[in-house]
Length: 547
Image (tube, rainbow, N blue to C red):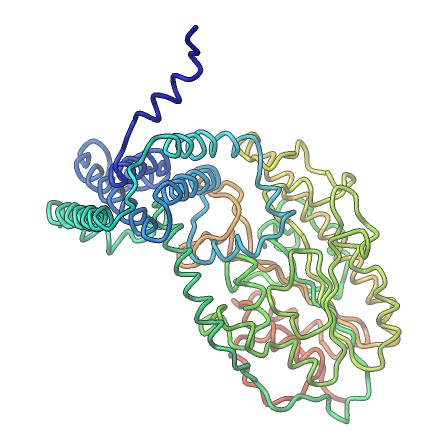
């Protein structure tokens, strides 16, 4: 009897490809299956069919570039592994680009490595599994099952070198020929439409990975710590103790706060606080946590900020600690992104430290044990609370069930299964929970006001796209990121004993400002005297006149 189950295996074993043929075929496959968004953006600028030849030319260039990347990988690893990496990269990245509008630039790759396992789990679903299996796993299995000629001896190695060189040269010739044939269109394409290249797959993700690796290598070699101030202290004339809480929000966008004019009542508790000021024109340092959090605590400012050396540069929390102020970072997010490397740090991501956990540990759990910590301190105190906030795409996980006010709310991380309104409903519920959390922070500070000069500063790290122009989540390159990802909420509350003048502060709330102003606001609220030169920015705080 003939065993028909062996036939496919026998056929694939008899199917024999040269390494170069396997590379160009796999590159063609990923070019055709992984670049839907890239070609949609291209066609929007160069409409089909009058630009059919040019669009085809761009496709050929993309195929040639992918072949080059695969050939270069093959120099460092077996050809089957190189092909599998290219295919899987293309499949994974195309899922997020096509489904969420995600762009894999250097900062997005950095953000991926900074994401913890819980956040990463939110991104996995049946849709992703099916997409990656169909366009990544199955093609990888095929190319690993077929016979690819091996070069083992010196003669074969020379032949491999010749064929590899020919493949690279052919790809370069194809690229040059295409540019020459459509030079007029390519001139405008490269100069006027640069953002489109960010959607090329897997060329852009793999290029970004290499660029990030090189940045990290340079950062490792630069081990000397940079001090931004030589002196920081509390003046002898300051006889009152300060208690300041800085709340770092996550993925909150300013236009979904009712305090900033949003039609829905997403801030019912904060609206009752007469000593609270909500700033309406604050721009973020970046569009991802990995950039914005270290940037907002830097004294350098966004224009001069370099995340690759931020871990070896003194930040505002270091300066505050140098002034003999008790500083503690409490985190319910992934981590501090290096900001709290040199100060006390406590994670509230598990039940060992956070008593408020159901589907996940809640932000309000960061207040647990805080009073005991404060009572044990003898000097001024700065507390940083890093929220989980509104982190997507699993918005429904970010709030307890009693905060599901806006319904129906999207209950899955696979946003394509929800209507746009369901996504917005779930997101707005996260803002409603943040409102409750911040109200509890203020209540905590009010309890301590007779003993301390109390204040709270809340600011989100970045915003979030909720489907506008078919873009979701965050992390787009800053130069063309939508306002939804860069316009963030910032609020200041001051206790009755504080030196912060709320009426004066309120006059500053509509002045365009940014994360650059946070460092100066922290130093001012704690009355730190130092020789630090903070990047100029409009002030956030008005201060009471001395008696």
